[in-house]
Length: 430
Image (cartoon, rainbow, N blue to C red):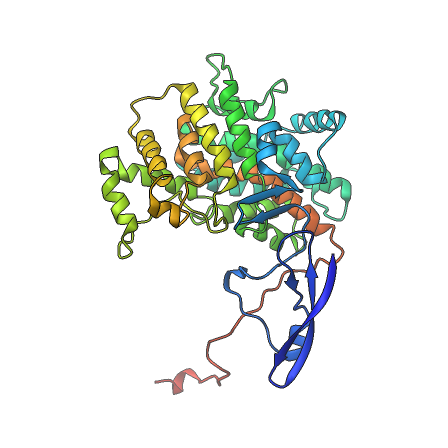
């Protein structure tokens, strides 16, 4: 990383601030000593112009529609690899050799079972509890069940905690799903791959054999790859901020899940499906398209455009193909919601209004349709997102813990409340 300086004039004083450049992407102005030199802070609501850390994991170029995991384009990873290969890459920085991949797969597979006492822990939830509420609680509770891997100063314990979370998250997610629909928990099977194992835990029942559909398994595996990491988003920043205090890794990931639960973040694919339900039928689409184009109408098309990607979301291209593969495999016909989705997709890719504003269908649009077709209810969508993003959170947490320059997070503020004033005794107040 190279560095030079830039000058900033504050009143009559000129100060020099270091400018740091990464391998790709915008340079950053280091303002670490700004307050000491000027007595001022910077003001950046949402931190959208602030680099809060240095990272080697994920790179996004929103203008060009680029997403790289450790330098590898997301398209190549999703097309040619599997989810656990991407997990290894995000954690260790390189693609695994065949021996490393086999060892990693083995270790993850042998960690998929959860402590049997967690079964009783689940019984404390109401049967109609939202699966994300269950996930926040159960992942946070892992620190009570696996307190032999909470010492963050021990590299071995950090590794064990990382493996446990990647391996057990599908089991906990499937348990949350089964609990919400009143079916018995299904234990993992070591002879299945990661995603096939998860599908079986979700959809198998004890009274009959369950055969995993390889097309669906591959599609869900792609969804996991596409959601594995996405740079310094709200939930990842939450994990880093929680971790900066020295909190144990299970608590940090639980904090990330809680943040992801927000509809502006992880709930976007659920919102896209709810929009399709509101439209209801293909015949209603013109009315809703007109509402979307009307600046004075509060209605917005969910699942179109992206805050970061000002071009086509690179994940959406893969997800579009995967979505149609799933629909074809399942032979779904006469589903009004999917008919609406297909027609909306056609309009968005051909209507000049959408093209000019670059309101392309994003990953949330396609993943919501795909997950619904697979049989997942909408309140499970964000749970699946959390399952996939766990490895990204762990990789980012691990990078932060191992950074010698890491400090506890402490954002500043612009105070606009009352200035100092004196306390008035009760008897004197009017």
